[in-house]
Length: 270
Image (cartoon, rainbow, N blue to C red):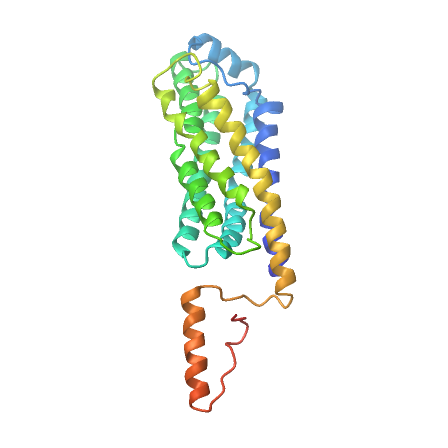
């Protein structure tokens, strides 16, 4: 059961890519993103022409956004095995995933609101909502930067001969984090590669993020299956070095006194 739950969460990664991708491309027709230099009339016309599609697309995005949390926690649970001596890294990943989920929820709410009354409200209001929509997508990259760096560092801390995750995935995570850095430049440009629809602010970070999810999902699935093979009874394994050392000390003390004490019920202590 423990393995099946983790696998279900891990498969949420590819599913969220599909939901968000379908929502923004097939239904909402929001990719490629419009230019910040478009007139308010052009923006309103797009929302008026795709009202139903944008609404459906935002529904798919909000469901896809909700899947970030179970996927990220499945990833974090396996990454924690790679760096058991640094539990704070696990908690940072969980916190960042919650922030990322909320960003997609806000993105969906703003997009849905812009498509709720196109043509019925002031054009500049719809244009401002559209700007906010894309700012929500490209500007708050700090959640994703910290998240990806922490994943990468955790993986690279695994010094075993057969690490939980291959080292290249750690470097990939750090490179992904670097690709999100230009997002804040979207505040300053209305055209060119640093506008919110530009190469360095929109295209590269967006493609990299969703491309990062896919291999990390399959690596997580592999790590879950590996853990199940190593521990077929499903009992949780205590891997924190400090805890393992304390159990070793207690065993030694009990042996010195001529006593025996089994491991705590339901745990495997190396």
